[in-house]
Structure formats: C-alpha cells, structure tokens
Length: 287
Image 1: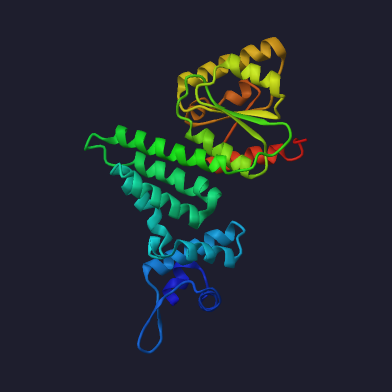
Image 2: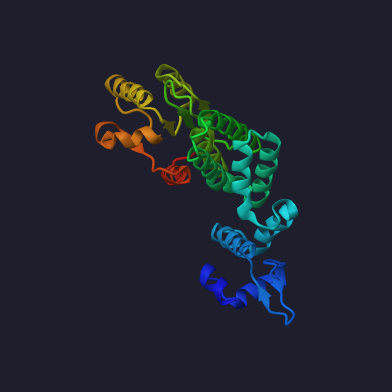
C-alpha cells in the first residue's frame, strides 16, 4: 500500500474508499487479506486521478472503467500501445477496437486531447529502419482523421457568429485543424471547418459572407505559411486589419517574430492549449 501511495499520491484510506464504494481499483488479496497492487492497479488509479482533475465525478470515472471492462483487461494504459501496434501492423479492425475502447474510457474530448496526439507522436517516433515509416504515417493519419470526422459529426452545432478553422494554402495535413475544431465545438463555439488547402481568396470570400469572430489557420509547412503571410499583408494593405487571426502548427515556430509583423496571435504547441487560448479570447465575443 505504501508504494502505491508514493507512486500516485493517493492516500491508502482513499484507495480503500474507492474500492469499497465504486469497485476500483481491484487489487489482489493475500491469504491474510492484505491488498497487493499490481502495475495495472497503479495505472487505474492514475487514470482515475486524471479524470477527476478534468472535473468528472468518481462515479463517472469508474463508470468508464466499468464500460471498458475486459476489453482492456481493466488497464487503461494498454489502449495507446494497442492502438499504435494495430496501426503499425495496418490492422484496421484491431485499431477500430482499440480506438472505441479509448473513446469509452476517455470520452470524446479526452480522445482528442490525449489519445490522438499521443498516437501520432508514437507512430512518428517509430523505427524507420524497416522503411515503412511513410506508409504507416499515412495509414495512421487517415485512420485518425476518419475518427475525428466521425466525432465531429456527433457534436451539436451551436448558434451565433462562427469561428472559421482551416489549413493554409497547399497545406494537406489537416488533423491538427480537425482536433482544434472538435475541442472548440465541444466548448460551445460555432466552428465552420473549411478543411485543407484553403487559398487566400477563398478565405476572403468566406470572411465576407460569414462575418466570423475570428479565423484559425493551421500551418505545418513553411511554404504554406509564406502564402498566408502574403495574404495577410495584402489584406492589411487593402482593408486594414483582418478578422482576428490565430495561426498554429509547426511552421509558425520557425518565424517567432510574426506577431510583431502582422495582426496575428500564434497558438501554443499542443492542440488543447491552442483551443484553450482561443476559448478564453472568445468569451464575451460570441453573440
């Protein structure tokens, strides 16, 4: 028991209370009825800690574990490696099962904030010696994109002035923009997702038609960012300040002085931090 307290920070009395009231964790018992906590039990405790920190009640958090059941052998930490293994093996059925289990455990927002980004990171840091890194990355990205679109279709569409989310010109990597859309839609913002490879002239027409509260654009490629910079400069020259702009993605980190040159806010790295930044900025802006 002492080791579990040290590893998780959860007092022994709390662990016993959780076990008695909610059925989790589920340690083995010795002949003298002493609790034996396995690595699986520690993973369960940490899972419950994360869900509580996100605002879930203990009943809701343990309910997720009840729903997942034997699918993950009561160990939520097996979801990520199971999904990554399935994607590296091009095993779509196993990947679907692993993702569905993760969705039951984490909920839609948890999947967007945790499972999808961590999966991409794991896939990208895989062993390239076998020469299939590009194929695996494409397969995994397309699989996760389909899952993100499915989650997006399940969310209600709020009313009010929209926020436009898109990828920069010639930008085909849209997963980050999709995840941002999901998180902001889940926070009650009306988001119009314009997809990949949005040229500047099309963005101008969308702005003119929709009168958005702002525009968020994802850039992972420097060439795409350069085109967006040219578009923003042209807008300022012709019309004055553009709508409120948020730019994110790996390419923006290469040009740290952008906010000093253009009326644009650079979003912080992880997508949930970017969503949080926009969410805070739009509080009181929505009609």
